[in-house]
Image (cartoon, rainbow, N blue to C red; front, side, top):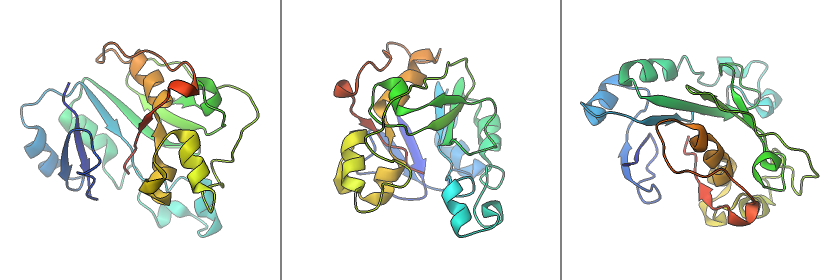
Amino acid sequence: MNHVGVDVEDYSSEYPGHFFQMDASDITSLVEVFFNDEIDLMWLSPPCQAYSNLSYVHHDNPKQVHDTFYDLNVRGVIHYLEPDHYIIENVSSCGDLHEPTRINGFGVGYDFDLERHFETSFPCPDAIGDGESVLNMEKGIGDSYTNVAEAKGVPSEWGKTAVRSAIPKGYVQHLLHHCPSVDGVEPASDNGSQQHLTNFA
């Protein structure tokens, strides 16, 4: 399976596949990249600022300041490119996800309670567990972002923004295990086996 990434920022040196630096909401450019290609799975990670509870610290209505799914043409991209399946990832407070799968760290073998929501085009059960979190992932990104990186299993050299955006591999394993267009992905078992997959958005 080939991996193709698209983002306005240049992540070509980190991306594990073919990378195109362009606006992912631009249908014309995307059609040129994926012309006649069959897309098994499309993963979309729209910026979360319009939906994050932390944005309310600075704005009464973050949706008036930051781009929403509508502004970013998220569903238009899915409609025109017609992937076999798709996943849209965002924060748990995002109201524009349709019946999302809920995943937190405890549910997939980590020692933290970072909850993220994923709208999927295929049935996928929640993975929500209980426990005592070793870190506050939502607010502990300041001076302790290196600890957050270690807990997630990502390099601290990526910096605060990338560490904050990183989706731990166990979350991705859970989703891909249930995706009909992806074969051979085992569900997450314990955080000792976790590596990382980055969400560039």
